[in-house]
Image (cartoon, rainbow, N blue to C red):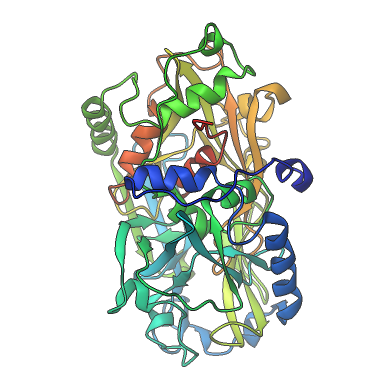
Length: 496
């Protein structure tokens, strides 16, 4: 995995005043700035101080110790006494395609739309992003870097009777500034039923008071942190994935540079060109949308909410609800103590995966432009049949001993080191999942491994096309949005 020392030794460009330019250029300039109001080392000192200052404790407990949570007598659903927050129910899914045409599972039903928002502001002519050191009970290392605001409606309307959500007025109130991005996006379709969050990036006007659990970072600094395991949380990554396009055309190819095979430096130039909206793509934007619409239309997927007690192949004991064959995930209960949250003590259910997952894009350069192989993937909790997902998205352990394995899984798992362009472990949503981690990869492939004509359900897209699709809600899933943020964190070319 990535080494902090290796990632943080680059000599940073000086932060200097700049004339007003387009939003894309301002974001690109921030992405190239690896120093800001804080040096990166000062950030790590601050982050460690916040970890020491917080009082965090997460303990697995039996369901009987849950406060204000209970299993409904009639349905077996796990619900909160307020009728708010979320519930754990059952789901029955049938589909007419794929190796698994029917399954049952528990699923989280959380109908309210939350806000995931990052506040940005210029300092010395460079955009900075206001990030929060936030404790989540499901994070393996507890404290991670979250958006400015990460709150459900129950949180910011104070159903929990806690303190105010800091900075919420910049996203919902009279102090709201210039909106750079605002789109409804899905969460994990395998674990949430029809869950959406409002992903927002807002530029502040005037002075912004700085709370001790928050800091201003350039996009370049956040990009460095995206190369470190379990530092930037899922909610930050999905918002960063929704940034407007800020690719800068690197200009004419150096002789021979764009033609190098896997492992060559041509990868980074082809990636830089792939970010540009005007970059040449295998499919036009119209043809890509037509393909995606056809993928959504060709599946007959029925996902029916059912009582949790009627979920077949799952059983419940005092401490967990789990699948009888030991695969997939468990539903467990925890008790939390957190000194710096709106509520300082609570209990809740969490979903705990049985093993670490893999989310990977297979990538190839076509005519000097990098493309990633996206999969139109069915997940039971999606609002609309399929969303674009990474090439590989699964927990490999779940396929041990089975005859069917996901396409490209072995290519990704067995890739030689020189073909792995990105490789970092990131946590998933720590407010609902316990120790849920994916190994995120970008693996460069050649024609033999990944032909220009992909299998059914897969399509080559540029980074710029993926960015454009994210302007539409529920087109690109949360794992692919994370990988887009990671691709944008790699090898920015500048005019220097």
